[in-house]
Image 1 (cartoon, helix red, strand yellow):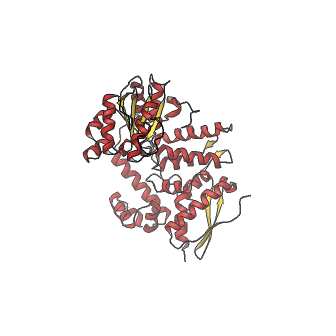
Image 2 (tube, rainbow over the protein chains, first blue to last red; image 1 turned 60 degrees about the vertical axis):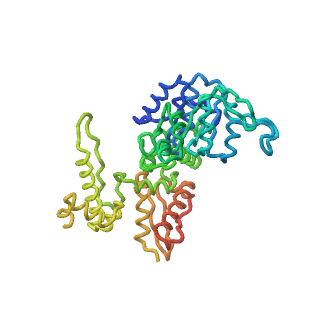
Image 3 (cartoon, rainbow over the protein chains, first blue to last red; image 1 turned 120 degrees about the horizontal axis):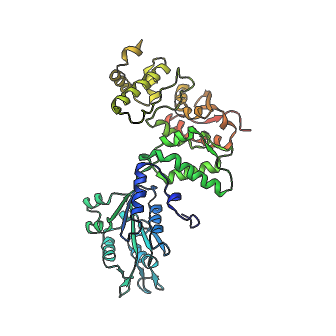
Length: 346
Length: 78
């Protein structure tokens, strides 16, 4: 993140989904806290962004925010990196060097990829968290540090504890204020807002008007599973912003790999192919306050889609199966289950 | 030899998105292990659309149809 984009709640964390609103609410509540925060989330879900936000909301906001990825360093380097070293501590240590903890004094340190910290180092980290003092490599006296600690992990630390890969005592020391960031595929309703957010940022930077986004692109983006989460979405938006030349973000700007994977996602087809006999039915949203049976509705949609596919292919079950992205045998089973056999074989 | 219907099946997977955007990708011919397509609609005149769609669809075709060789687009973007 560049220093010019001052983080605020509104600009950093975009999302209207219930899960993200719960996260924002929790961040607001812990705003003045000094306790350790444990942020769990897949790669690209915004752990560092969240850590920045926690820092910016805290009383420490005018002091340093130091982010370190613990995955970047080898086992021996990480200690020197975090705690610093004295001159002569090892070959090449030609002068005293403060570690990241000392650099963050008075502020916040964000230790990302804490799940990659080796067990031997975990003991030392635990001692720092307990005593609030560090010892430089080759140093003899403990240096007190006033640092708020935020850690990030892409794996479930509790699970690593069970597997014996993470110290239980350190886990409890870290897991004071837990924040879990949901992967993007679990909150697809946030995708249009995120797209607009990123696209308008790129276009505003260039001083150009923000283009409209076609519904088809929104649909493709909402159906794609985003294994790289918000970071991947951000990069896709940057790419579109660079290549769009017609004033509207259309399918032609989208990487075909996203289109293919979006097309394979289990969702109601967007529009009929021009060869299709009729449009596939789309699911209607129930009226407000009406209760429905999800299972019945899903069966209903399934039956309608299967009959659409069969109509489109003039009853050719192999082609219909291909159209629906299922095996021929699966389609046969579904036809029987939906009771379509009699009406469509004719 | 690559079959026309195999190529069409791969194209059909992404066509709904193009059709919804007022465009399409039309399979003109399959010769040997290569195919020629034409982009129509709003994206047909966009050079970057040719790049993104051409490269991505060719990759998908090669992935799905082991013998597939080259995807050509008819009518260069003006």
